[in-house]
Image (tube, rainbow, N blue to C red):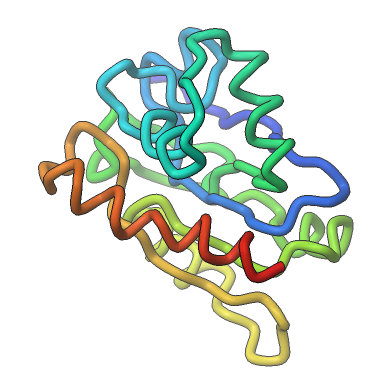
Length: 166
């Protein structure tokens, strides 16, 4: 089994929100695109939150995120895993999120796309009390999470609320 490596972050200097996943799934790694599995609801949710027609073109998706001051990365930088399930992740090494926060001081909110991202961050990095960053755990957009789409969308609507207040 080969060691898997996540991608570089999607981020601009003016990013205000960072969405952290755990580790890209098999299809995402194959295509070298965040949330490439067509059953993952990440892109559908984000486009719907901003009442925007969804694009299937990855470069347009990336531009859309950047235009909304949203950054995306993963907590885990490398790991071993068979398949795409977070429960199969072994021997993870985390990305240097502290350096990212220093390099992008406008980041004010971190949203975790699911429990594995949240638990891994908490275990390896902790939540700095002196930080002016707010942390929220969201229900995973993964097809492995069977919560109804409407419930996920309602929970993820915190993104539009946060950006409206900026």
